[in-house]
Amino acid sequence: MIEIRLYKPEDYMKINRRKFDLLTFLNFPDPEAISKNLGKGPAFTAIANGEIIACGGIVPFWKGVGEGWVVTSELLNLYRLTFAKTVWRLFYRLIKEMNLDRVQTTVDAENVISQAWVERMGFEYEGPMRKYIDGRTFYRYAWVRS
Image (cartoon, rainbow, N blue to C red; front, side, top):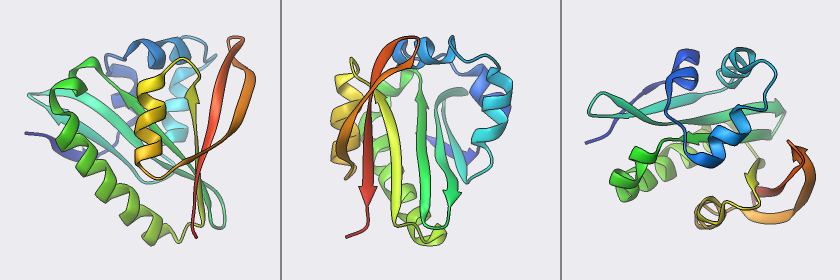
């Protein structure tokens, strides 16, 4: 069973990241500042058996626009379906509560699992972001209110 609670910056620092999330994390000059910034918008932490399996939320940019983010652990594989349903409900609740017209996110170009996941969440591919982090290409995706 997954427990969902409000995100704390220390969750971001403690999570045992998947490969792609770890590559990104290792290139941030100040991960603690990032962990605090991610908490500026509504954010949640998913826990199973006392372990953090994911953190995520939406950081507001300006009226109607936010940046969606998720950091995941390998343990997430044990709870894929429950996690997906939970995130789906939270995501659309936040869109409504925050009155968002656009939520954008970035995904490592080599992370095909996350690309498929954001597409199932309703995001559309917008294009490459070359040399975005550590010289690697990331893809920009966006959910836009129709």
